[in-house]
Length: 253
Image 1: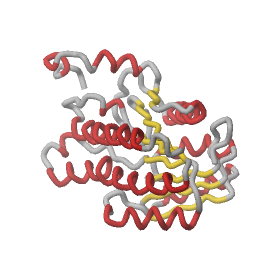
Image 2: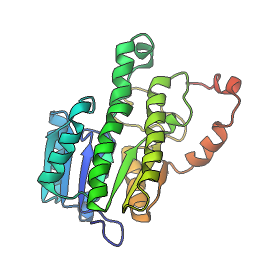
Image 3: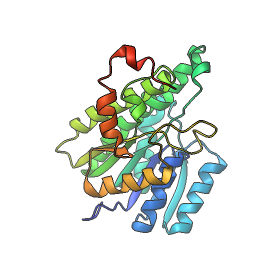
């Protein structure tokens, strides 16, 4: 179980290839997290992440096959993982893709695929996870959202809408779990300079995977419900969400 100072001893990552999730795991393992299970599509990147967790001191660091779009098998997948590894203190919902807006606007299939990966498929997996966490009577679900979901912009409205759906779903799921011993923490980073955004011009108040990981660990320890990275974005978006639509449409990309 998560100890008195907020340190989990086991973690399951949905989307184990995520750069942000791997940065979080890298912070957790030296702080007594002994079991790391990385769920994702089989790849060298996923295997290397497990190797790094073992090298950092995890007693168990394994990969399991998982695809957010394979919705009909999510319940069986979650049951198999929990039955095999036991209770999890922490589950990180990290699966997601950015996509290319110009392509997405012209391709309905690509748009549907991104929405399934980032929102509907991941939300379905979270329902299955929440059921097992509720049954064990403890645990935290960390949902990697984005400030892009707080108000969709024309330059990335497909990605933004997927995060908006995920964020709203996570809020409702968290409310439904009150009193069960299980809680949800939503993480809303700004522009993250990393693998997913390589070649893009960083936006104001940009951050890094390492900074996001530090903020997540602090949020776990403090029991936070929502974490902005950097924290100033909480106040920036409190203002930006109130801008008239005519002004919002003219915001630069």
